[in-house]
Amino acid sequence: MSMDQLADLVSKVSDIVWNSILLYLLVGTGVLFTIRTRFVQIRKFGAGWKRLFGNFSLNGEKAGKDGMSPFQALTTAIAAQVGTGNIAGAATALYSGGPGAIFWMWLSAFFGMSTIYGEAVLAQKYKTVDKDGHVTGGPIYYIRARFTGKFGKFLAGFFSLAIIFALGFTGNMVQANSISASFKTAFGIPPIVIGVICAVIAAFIFLGGVSRIASVTEKLVPVMACFYIIGCGAILVINHASIIPAFKSIFVAAFDPQAILGGAVGITVQQAMRYGVARGLFSNEAGMGSTPHAHALAKVEKPQDQGEIAIISVFIDTFIVLTLTAMVILTSGQLQAGVPGGLQGTELAQAAFNTTMGSFGNIFVAVCMLFFAFSTIIGWYFFGETNVKALFGKKATKVYAAIVVVCIVIGSALKVDLVWNLSDLFNALMVFPNLIALIFLSGIVARASRGEDILKK
Image 1 (cartoon, rainbow, N blue to C red):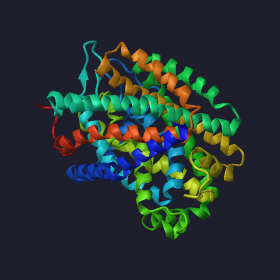
Image 2 (tube, rainbow, N blue to C red; image 1 turned 90 degrees about the horizontal axis):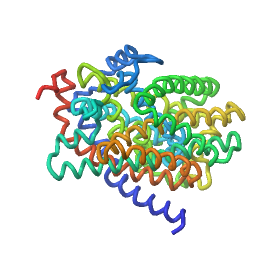
Image 3 (cartoon, rainbow, N blue to C red; image 1 turned 30 degrees about the vertical axis):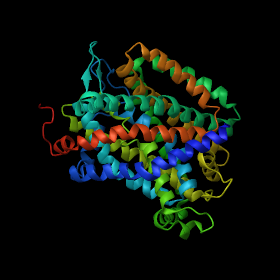
C-alpha cells in the first residue's frame, strides 16, 4: 500500500468517526456541562482572568514534587493548546470547510470552555501522590475513580494508550511537520535538518522533567502569544477595509456556504461543521483529555479555582489566537476554499501573511510556527509521559522519550496529509473514554460550579 493510499484510508475512517459520532458527542457534552454548571464559562469568566493575572510571572516558583503554580499549569496547558492548530489547522479548516468553519470553531469553543472547566476540576479532585511524593493526575485517574473493576481498568488503559499515540507520537509528528514545512518555505532549509535540531532541543527539555518543562512554558507562552498577536494586529490594521466583509463571510458561510463560495466548490454545511469542530478540538483540546494532566498539578485551594483558569485557556487559544489567523487569511484574499490544488495548511497561512508583509511574511509565520509547535511538543510529551508512568512505570519514560524524539525527526519529513489524518484519527480514539467519564461525573462538576466543597468524601 502506497503512502497516498494509506492516507486516503485513514482519512475515510477518520471522517466516519468524526462526522457520524464525535462531532455531535463533543458539542453535546459541552452543552450538557454548560447547562449543568449554569453557564460557568460566562459566570466565572471574569474570575478566571483575575486568577490568571494574580499568578502571572515569567519567572515563577520552581515546579517541585508537589506540583506547579496555577500560572505554570496554565502555560503548560496553553503550550499544548496553542500550536499548529492555530496556524496550519485554521488554514486547513478554511480551505476544507470554507469561512463558515470558523463559526463552528467558535461555537464548539464556547461550549468547550465549560467542558475544560470540568476536566480541570476533576483532575484536581482525583489527583494523586505517588510513592516518591510526586503529584500526578489526569483522566486516567478520574476514569478509574468513576468506573471500578475491569471496565474501569480497560477504559483508563485505552485512554492512556490512545493519548500516548495521539499526542506523544502522531501529534508531535504533526508539530514537527509544520515547523519543517514553514522553514523550508521561508529559508529553503531541508525538513530533516529542522527535524533533527528540534529533536535535540526537545530531548534536553524532556530530560529536565516537570521542573524544566514548567520553567520553559511559563517564559515561552506569554512571549510567543504577544509576538503573534502584535503581528496579526498590525496586518489587520492595514487590511481594515476587509475586516467587516470577512466577518460577514464567516456567519453567512456557516449556514449557506454556496452564498459565499459558489455551488461549484461543493462545500456543505456539514463539511464546515466537521472541519470547524475537528480543527477547533485539535486547537483548544477541550474534551480531549490532554490539558487535565497540567491542571492536576496546580497548587490551588479548591478544584474550581483551577477550573476557572482553565476556561481562559480555551478563550485565548480559539477566540484570540486562532481567530487572528483566520482574519489574516480572510482579509488577504488568498483563500480558495475547496478549489483543487489551492493553497492550504501552512502554505496558505504564509501566503496570507506575505500579501501584507511581503517576503517577511514567510519568516514571521516560520518563527511563530516554531514557537507554537515546539511549545506544543513539550506539552504533549508531558501529557503522554504521565500516562506512560501510570501504565508502565517510571523506567519506561526513557524509552517513551526516545520514541518521541525519533517521531519528531520522522514527522518533519513525512507527507502532510497522512500525518494530519493519523492525528485526527487518534485524537478521536482518545476522546471517547474521556467524554464517557466526564458525562458520568458531571454532577460533581455541577456542585463545584455552585461553590460546594467537592473534596469532602
